[in-house]
Amino acid sequence: MKKINWVILFLLVLTGNIAGMYMDSPWLEKITKPLLMIVMIIYFVSSLTTVSSGLKKWIIAALAFSWLGDVLLMFQQGRPVFFLLGLSAFLIAHLFYIFFFHRVRVNEQVKSRWWLPAVVVVYYAVLIAVLYPKLGDMKVPVPVYGIVISFMLLLALHMLFIKNSKAGQLMMAGAVLFILSDSVLAINKFYQPFEAAGLAVMLTYGIAQLLITRGAIAYISSKRSK
Image (cartoon, rainbow, N blue to C red; front, side, top):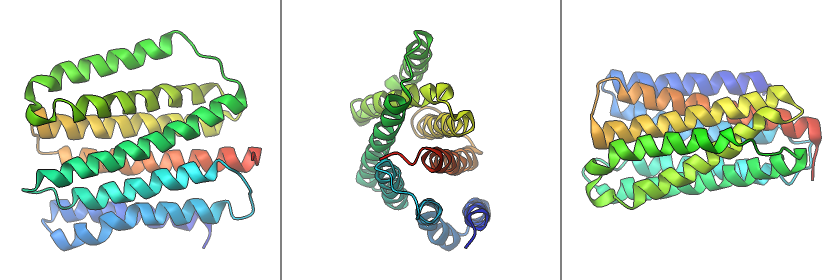
């Protein structure tokens, strides 16, 4: 299948998942949600079949643990342990994205800018200040998760300064949307539920994974790094 067809298939599955939420169709949600990352993994692997690169394993691992997180969160209703397990799976996925972005930064010899950590610290401080009084039993897991995703964001912002600017912009935009998705999910769950939360979370999450994957494909294809 052509690469563009995998993207179209992914967008169709994502649309089906969102439609399932608003049509109150649990079976459509349960069918489409696990398919999202499966399609992404196939798209990523099939796009780089002729490229030998040690960077590929990090993206595949991140997408695989994202799939696990998606599946676990499907069973969280009335069973808080599944939310914690899903959170753990996504934390590991973010760690693999951290490894990938770090490797790219080292390969590209991108130097740090003082304002990048400042932006991330402000984001983390505001989010935790808003959420912390409402976290209850999650007062440790959620801030720890926040630290991990903030570090992922910090490294992703460095992608703006790599030589392959298109790939860097795609990966950075995807990381920002991923953080936005996580933040909306946390606000809806712990601070103030709102009607459009499901749409906002899934749309930003889905597009985030697509942009990071496309950016990674573009970068790895151009570098063919080991």
